[in-house]
Structure formats: C-alpha cells, structure tokens
Length: 99
Figure 1 (cartoon, one colour):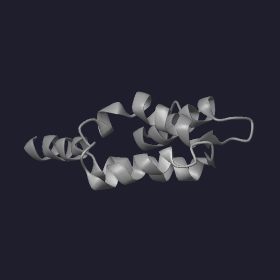
Figure 2 (figure 1 turned 120 degrees about the vertical axis):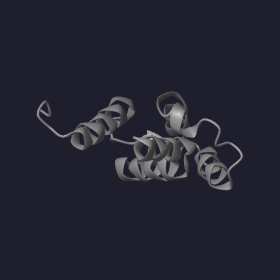
Figure 3 (figure 1 turned 90 degrees about the vertical axis):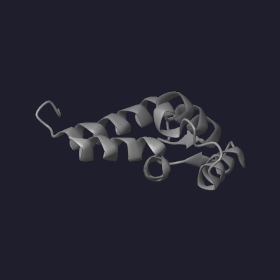
C-alpha cells in the first residue's frame, strides 16, 4: 500500500507493523513485551544510553507493573522519547552537517 509512500510514511508504517505483529488480540503490548521489543528492534538507538537518567526512567517504568499493557500511541511516544535522547540522533545530525 505504501510502495509509493515517502520515506517518512514508510518509517511510520514499519513502526505500526512491528507493533501490530507483537501486540495481543486487544492491540496492546505488556510492558515486559515492550521492553523486550525495544531491546531487540531499537537497539542502535538505545545502545549506550543506560547511564542517562531519562533512559533509566523510561526503562524502569516498563519494569513496574510489567503486566500492564500499553497501546500504540504510548508505544510511539516511547520511540520518540528514546530517539530524542539517543546519541545516534546526534550522529545522524552530524553526518548531515558534514556533507
């Protein structure tokens, strides 16, 4: 459906597909599943962030009541939050400015 979509549209469609492939019949993920998914599918963005207070806050919130579930909107907020604090984002910006 998105063959002719923009790169941004394809990126968000991919995030939605990954979420949906892991979500339960209610279209939700448990916090423990969310943490596992982030560690396996978002590794390059979270690698090396373990000592940052914001990262610790996000991950510890996934450990609390790990059976509570999150919806797609909360999942996307997690992705954006982790992206904004990531060192990889700065590396991406640096590549753009050096070209």
